[in-house]
Image (cartoon, rainbow, N blue to C red; front, side, top):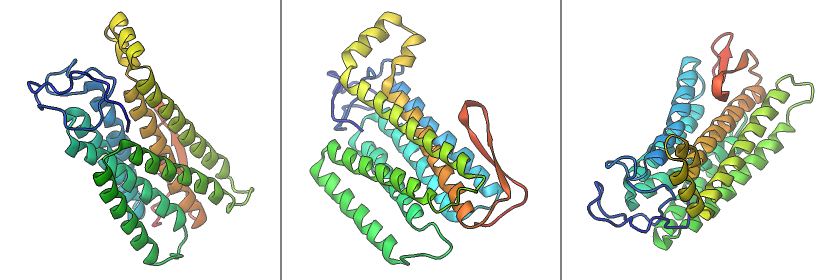
Length: 279
């Protein structure tokens, strides 16, 4: 996401991937680390989406959780792959592979939050409406070709997801022993998203200062000043935490209690079941 073209030499046709056709370019200097990757650190940090989501997909498959949860985490994986493709090439086609799956995946989040019970409240109507909305958004974004349109859509959907998540917590009685854990997951997700958003803005607004600082400190300290890379890391962790919150919330609402949460190094969250449950 972004609104600035921060690299003045981005259209050098001698680059490995040729001329930049993307409407966005970031503060990381193009092809500075690798001649094969336009934005090396932005590409590497995009792996965080893939690693966290595939780790959780493995957990879901191992414990036979419902397909909807696997689809959710698979969406996050697609976002990560699209982000890697975009930052590697800086092509408009791969930019769409990055940005459009972000909208689709947050829509899946929203759907699973709304349809959180054993029985579907809206039947086939809600999926049809959401699919049509996503098709309209896709066409509008391609026609308008304005990154701000994508940012507003993504931001609004994420705010809705956090709001609805907090609202659903009221369905659980205060006596529920998991409620504190769930609040922690929701807070972790929100704080991570907020820090990521701040890093994203720093990358946009303080680019020249960041570039000067990276040049001054050099490797390996310059890596820590790649703010868009931190956006990837924190939003990946935030997505992971929010998806885990949604998974636990669903199990609680459906009365599935035979599990425990374990926190691993780097804040990774592990679901352990006493026996397999079908959600």
